[in-house]
Image (tube, rainbow, N blue to C red; front, side):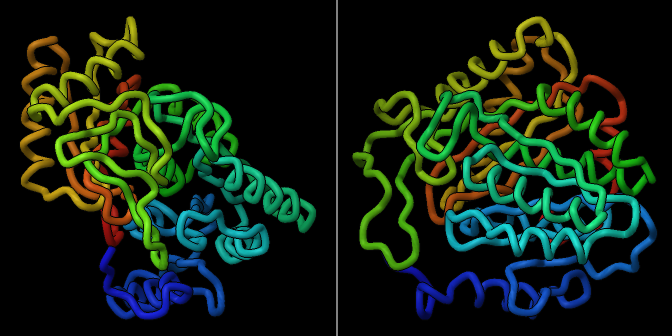
Length: 329
């Protein structure tokens, strides 16, 4: 696998430096760490932070900025950030009203974020958290007990970031997150595997005419392989599974994210989005918000994911449509 890089062991460090070079007005890096922090005066509000392994760009550092994340912690490629770095992010982000952690449901992330939370609380910082587990494809995967956290996490960043900006307390944000998480569901598909920097082999191999449904963002196995289908058929497979998961809620209003996994052109993402809209119209389902693009990727993997958010209340859509100042929203 050909990649534009220098030494694979330095790729995350050099990527973060490149982000700072490109966006010095928006973000800064805490020296000698993988922490990207927004450049904004502290105003006494709750800080929302997130993070995880690198290789999913623009997640999570691309969503650091006014109205979304206060900071993101970037681990090595597909590797959870360490507790000491998460703790440092909590300390530099705290504005006096507490820090709220958005954690994707992977065993390493949960262990390290929870350890950092305990250490921060010992230092007198109020910390709360939520675990995102929006991937409905499989239960219990390679790095996960239960369902995986994938692109729906970006909606959590957006809605909780807006809540924090509006001055809601950490208790109110915790309650909001508990109601929000069950309303977000995602599922994806892959056309190719993914190769980490420095590796000579992809995580899995698909034939030229083969796809896999339900693959995770680290190349974890999905639930079925079959011959490549039309975009309409792919959209129908993913949407049907998502709608079935919502059950009685299916007649409500939704927000939709079509998320590229890194190697899929926007042309194909928009074709797929059009097919999703046709299928939703056929089901008489109402969509109030669309977002299409690369938000949580898997390096160069070809494929995409589909996320539905059930708009249980008007605050969700108000939050989604609110302006933010970030690199990638």
